[in-house]
Length: 575
Image 1 (spheres, rainbow, N blue to C red):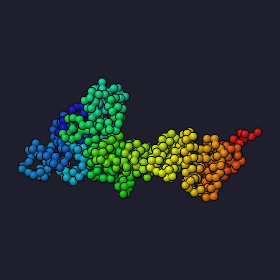
Image 2: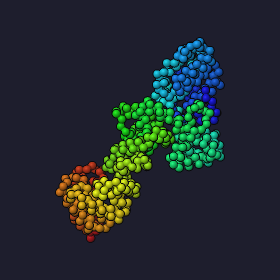
Image 3: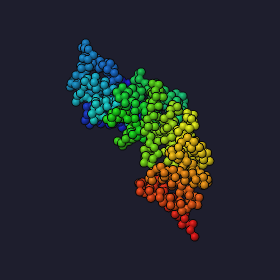
Image 4: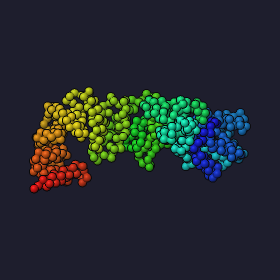
């Protein structure tokens, strides 16, 4: 049985009380499973219960059986048989049955069996389960990282061990490093939040601070320096007598055990975990995840990750959270397997495929996806992927539609640099990105840059595309808008009359592009003093849009507002 210093018991009194009630005071169950994330303190809580039983129920025998492997479990049963003096030159299998039979019998008296670290479903349910004792005088407590193991062992008699409260975390941290190293309550609370109030992570940070005569403030600074610094901190091993010998103590190494178990038992869940480790950790929508072969497989794999505590579901819906420490440890695991580049490439390609257009009906979806797209776009490993710049363009469109013009300029500039390095001057992608950047310039008040860039795009497209080509007309339309903003009204009217004439000849009356150019031309007419033509054209646009678009459609509302404003302007100018 591992020896634990009393400091580790800080803050777990409520959980101890719940276990005492269920197993000994109410005594309404013979077996109970305690499950939770690796490093959450399951072993320590189980030992705390054992120490309480030893002190207050003196006639109760206590047995501790780590379920790390079949061999380790057999060794414990041999030790129990020797202690009870019940073996007689029996084999391994016979001693397992012998101990089980003894504990099942009345002569064993009261007993508590703690089966610790029972994480592998195959080992627990296929090999060990047949040797677990059952008696109305005995109780069995099993600790595991896996909800599946917990449910298989104890059905509904399961308890999930939660992270510490802030007060418990402060007390635990203070016990190890002392008041002087806390640098105040605020610094300590920020550190605990970063560590997700996970006991193992707090212990790891505390030992690091103590070893280096540091402070919580300095540790936080290191966490926020670079991802490499953060990875190094989370991977630092430390001496901890509260854990099994040869078991890793670092948070990352502790979770590697769980990651490998997930990969072995549910490869699809491991792939989802890898994918999500490079997203924004909060509010991950299920719809952004790579699709599996069926909905059932998706449900099962998500259940696996939730069962290990790597994901938490919001209100039993389809939005999930993953703590940044889990993400960081997963990325360390991926890096160890030399898969970082591959995973980021796959994630970038998938998000580029599923990220929606800036159409207003997609607004809810793109706002959900945007933080995750931005997170994957930060990765240096995606810099040479063409899909990155396609995604960057989509993101630029959406943030521009949301009124974030300055951000969109930055995004489109990156896309332009990429296309100018990889495409000829006349390449459609290069011209399209320049067109988009000009639109962002215009929205950001950089009218001169917008005019200069669009004049170049129009010149190239007029040289290379037919008069009726949609891309040529689109760039002419955009240039006319920019001319109008720049006070070049006559050039705007002339160019827009050409665009409208071509689109009226080639597009249906209700086509959005035809209506858009007519709308803009009406505004140019107004600026040029051609009020009658402006009103007549805008009335036509409003009539068509009221007939064809929803009442709340932005284009319909825009044309109605323009017409109303034009009428008010005319009325205000009347003698």
